[in-house]
Length: 368
Image 1: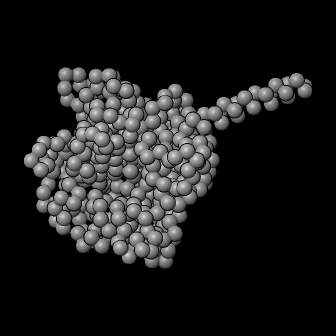
Image 2: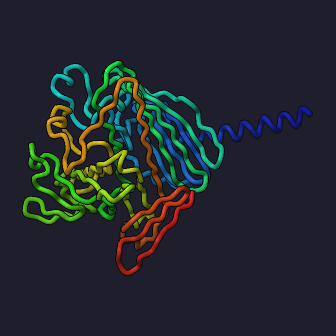
Image 3: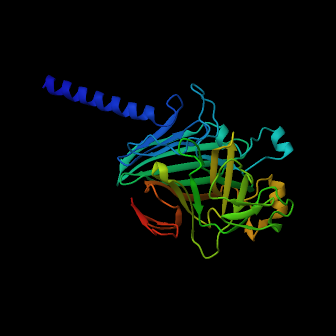
């Protein structure tokens, strides 16, 4: 009997050591984090700012969300990887800055809490985290589900106004890809339509309309799908055809046989913002950001502007009101000669990726 008990203890110790080792390899092990693992993928959420710092396929070391990693031993909350812009996108007013409001809101500068530890059931590993914005008066609870069948995670975020007065706010998802996934071969695709260049024609930002993905900028041709040595224009913002229900955006690196993408309901997130950054003549970051606004300015300017292309630039949340939004993130392998994404269709449990029109016209199906 004692021998059996000892054997069980040894097996449990081995299993715990294996899990601990896997956790140490996900995200940044010296920071407080919540890690979800399945046979298909691993996801790490940094509790110091709430960012997704790691999302990769099982058995792979390639994490596209590797932008701005914290220094070894650094524990201060900060934006990194896929972070959240909440309660705003962009700069606060001068008075708000003097009162302590950070750029892109407070979500990345506060400690998040683990509401429920990762559990596995019904083919999904799930966990819940939350944050409170002391100046903004808002809370957010995020539940993440990671499929056991494929590298697909479902995210549901519930926003609550805990104050006794209503207010305007914004929320923008800010996935930021970087090396080693990001290089000059990466192609960004989406189903957005018309847009504008941030700061190009303020205070009438839509007076010069651009169309995804090829634009004229300062006398030159720019293909926003790609990024080489010059990242200008740095930030462009787009809306979607009114007939569409879902928005999507992808970044694919055929040489590394990997694609990462996001899918969401347009009535929840009507804007797509594309950020391109290069350093020393090489791509250093690409932001594939979707959210409730496409104007990178303080709230006073958004309220004055109201809409762009008849699409609102902010939302209103009443006292004690709760608003829920959701999206899906995915990764899958792609062929070495993949030419980019032409379309994505989504139904429960199935994502279908159609290759850009060309000589191959292939489809990739992800069942989750």
